[in-house]
Image (cartoon, rainbow, N blue to C red):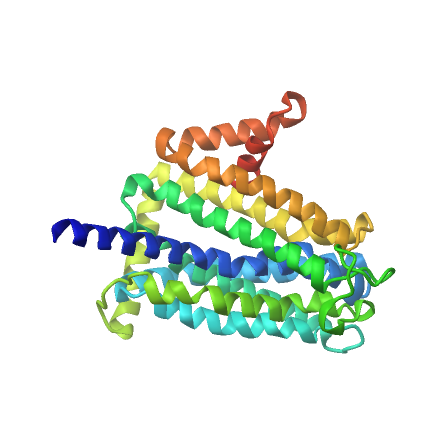
Length: 351
């Protein structure tokens, strides 16, 4: 009976871990299709008045979302720690996220409010899904032992990258087409009669991201154990804010924590810039269309996934610091040393 109970518990744990990682799988189309490779280039090249203006406006929307995340995430994270439950916060963030993704369909050329719709939807969607990700990541300590956090984290990221690869192939193969040829990357006409001239295939990535998210986020709500309820919202807000202020005081007094937070901010700021501007720069300055940009994205996603599959076990075995140093070193010297594709994937994605 004990062996049977242990086997049942192991199966439940594996199901919970996979369901947790499916959150990254569910959310990734927003980052891959909208933020970087499909909708953002469409915004800069077809919706904004000029590519330069499109890049500028997209940058302002990215900055607004980043500011909102910087202010809201620590506060809401502390409140969630005080209340105990994370799923209800993910659900609350999912509602504006879904609405924002669906709104991208209405950002059509000729719509006098198209630019505003796209920018507001992008800023609100980014804010919502990033905060939801904070709460999803907060579940990790309840799923695995501390020494396996690195492997679990990289598994979630790898699931996200695989999802990005799959959805990018779907978007380029069946939705978005070249305005010149009217054909997708697979040489097909877009499904549902989507018109390439008005960017319907590019705009359809919004509703497509909604459907993908709603289907694949369900296992996380159903099978991942949540923390028990600790306190009501009102007292939890007060307790959470006190905890946040105490943490900030400790960070200022502890040099290592302060340096880590500073380095983490700079590193992530660079990644955000690459993700937000990579696609629209290619469209505005290099003249690439959605097919060329998407093909490049497929290549990057494959190498990033391979790197993540290696990064997690390396983190668990050697520790985070040696892996980070290795990633930075290979990134700096990749042009002269001709490092392997897997190393490039780790450097591009982070451990």
